[in-house]
Length: 145
Image (cartoon, rainbow, N blue to C red; front, side, top):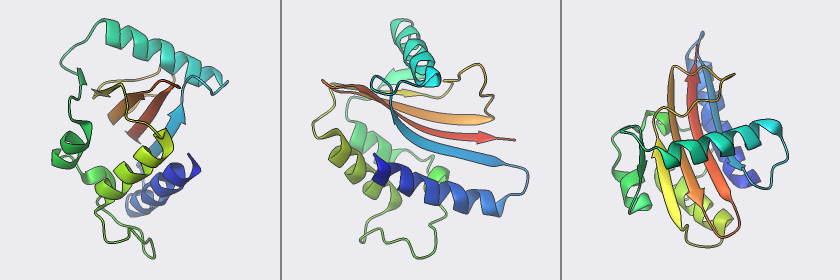
């Protein structure tokens, strides 16, 4: 999980350095095995969203292709200096890191464009949840001002 968060942190820092009054928060968490309260709150909210889907919460049937084809790539557009993507695009590299971390094909992958925990008031968010036999993982890209 550190590899993914190091990757996301590098992009987060690069984006933050470009804009003075904007904060970026990119992360990847294991919601079931993380004892922190916010992870448990996020897991509860995720299950609530999943039980009551909307236009802002959908299942990705072919998540790798849908992530690559998504035109909203500004999350990863500013490639940090000296960051080796091994010849891949940032999205391709991130997908490889996720597959490596999960160590199995996700049972279900869900996307949300409005997922928000009460204490996090984002201007824009993009969240993807990966359900596996071991856990539910949360990939989040948030912008705050």
